[in-house]
Length: 590
Figure 1 (cartoon, rainbow, N blue to C red):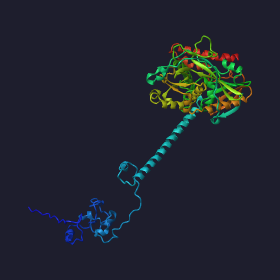
Figure 2 (spheres, rainbow, N blue to C red):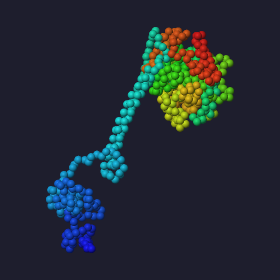
Figure 3 (cartoon, rainbow, N blue to C red):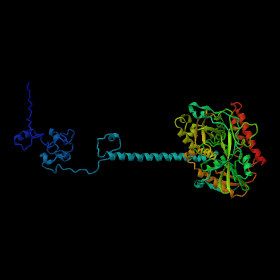
Figure 4 (tube, helix red, strand yellow):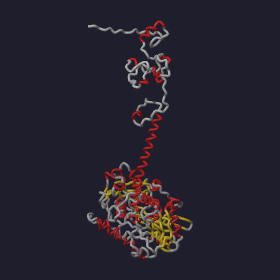
């Protein structure tokens, strides 16, 4: 066997530095020249400089014009040939010494900017790739994403508003938005006031004067403050009567009018309806009577003010038929029923009651009355005009060794699908979200409750959250929670301006005082944000003068349908009938 010898070339020693010895060194020139590969440029360098490519094994010189003239594709030394690309690699042609024709190696450099890469994670997470352009690219990506997000948001808002506007338009045509009173042809419209003019009004009143305090109050049971959805309590039914006598039928107001204590007379519910009129959506009406120099603000029998609106300021539509348990009329009946029973259940049942100056006016002797107090207060509107209002208080509690008066009201949940928030899941952890949702859906009702608490000078207003046992059962309810608020603080939260409230009342009073003696009706337009004042005959709303949209026989409909609750339905039916008869008696005598 014949073995071929492998000869290792002589490696010259460079005593002056790194790399091959300098060609100027005559002692090692011949040795260095024998060991150097052709067409390999060399340049002096230091250890701190970056090294270029030693060999380009990936080069494919498929273009003959770009192929170096000294080598070929099959030449094994072509991988070391950088003479044609010395400009790109930073090597000087003069230092290579292998290519004398510089024009042949000259190439134009493309001055166009590099193509902008698509935004993606390929370069975003590589913090060392193209470090100089990374901040600019990041800003461009953020701006592009913002533009896309704005387009998507605008598209969603456009579709959302289109759907909302369609629903809003459908609801405006619903039966719940009919006029609260039938406008007769012989009625003469005197004034038409848009709500936009109310927002600019402002009037400052002095501290009112307490004239009289009637009735009696029971103490509030503080254990209801600890109720949670997991420890709910069943809402009970009570036989105690609560009186809702209108202004001109109130015996105390009649007495104060004879004594010439004031010029204008009203109740807190009527004043609250005027003060919060710009927030109202449903139609409502007031009866205004000008007798001599006196002005009485009354409500009709079966007026919407006797009920409580539910879901009034929401954009979600409610069923149109009155027979539906979730219609506006049925929910108003249910809310009034809940509030009456809630105000009696949260009291301490020990038989103790704080009595005041006089008993409740218009009450029958020997009949058990609810815990309620009427505070008659007088405000000065100008030098010759005073206003007397009957304000309600429902309970009392001892706080910091001082007696505090409370107002008791309840919000009712009928179906989470309509409200959008399930109280049983959110009340314990997100009370603020639940209250904000109620302010959106029932803003007018909460504003009127706050206005009534401010008029009565209540120290605290308690708001209960009452829900149905089942969404389809509108007779049985449970108390999920009770929250307390100071009226002034709560008014600030819901943007209720006291000066603006009194400015609305003052403007309406000044307008009505210019009218001649007679009877008038102030009606909220069912479809427009405005109120109208009509002149009506003196016998209007008496002895079935007009067919009212809310007849009294329909107001007792829910108790009549309750056949499974024992005697509770009969008791409530009798109470409602007696109340209607009681309201008509003084009016007949008048």
